[in-house]
Length: 133
Image 1 (tube, rainbow, N blue to C red):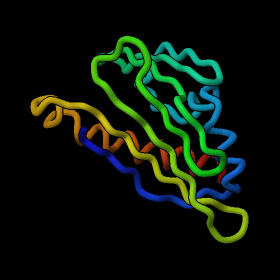
Image 2 (image 1 turned 120 degrees about the vertical axis):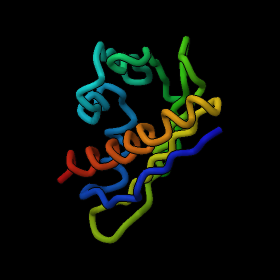
Image 3 (image 1 turned 90 degrees about the vertical axis):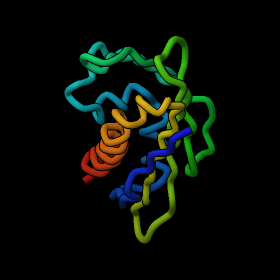
């Protein structure tokens, strides 16, 4: 597995509030880039198309309240992957968030996809931070 870790960013909301927001996939659409099309979601699952690349679907596999959310690939996906959202207490009414994306990538896909996947996890974390600004 290849691991992509976002910057650990301070979000201006409590860990409880950020955890609640990310515990529901219907909220994730607000964090997605413009290249995401055909977004469909309920609380625990979502599916979408990365324009020009692939159809993906995922589901929340486990939740540890106010600590982390573990998301896994669900159904037919071109790669096997997980996304973990970690929450860390911070001063005042804020929380630190770190996203970790792990993917099973062959060497060719890894050489092509590493930069976009790293940018993706950083962008998700930044959009989450902006959402609670």
